[in-house]
Structure formats: C-alpha cells, structure tokens
Amino acid sequence: MTDELLDFKQAAEFLRVSDKVLMKLLQEENVPARKIGNQWRFSKQALINWIAEGNSRDYTKKMRDDT
Image (cartoon, rainbow, N blue to C red; front, side):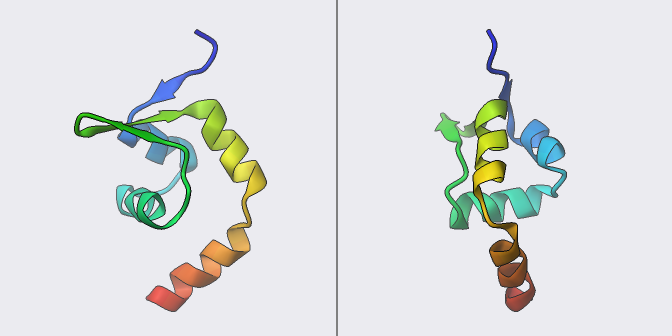
C-alpha cells in the first residue's frame, strides 16, 4: 500500500499540532479525513496535499481572534 493511513494521534503528530487543535481543524476546516466507527483515519498524502493547497495565514489569524 503506497498511501499510509494515520490514526488521530499520528495525524496530530504528523501535523505537529495538539489533539485539541486537530479536533478544531476537523470541526472548522475541510481536513481530509474519514470517521470509521468512532475513530478518525487520515491519508498522509491527502494531509500533505491539504497543507499545500491551504492558506495558513487565514487560520492563524482566526485562532488568534478566537482566544
């Protein structure tokens, strides 16, 4: 299998964010993920593509505004 699947903890580590931030991203952004049963699964390549296509400045400003 060429596309590595990550669980929630692995995805947070891969993105270098806390569990709380990843959950917020799942709720507010179009993070490529699937919930199977009660567990999240992430394609590593889809996360890379999502990061490459996004605008992190918008999210950073939003996080500052929310605090």
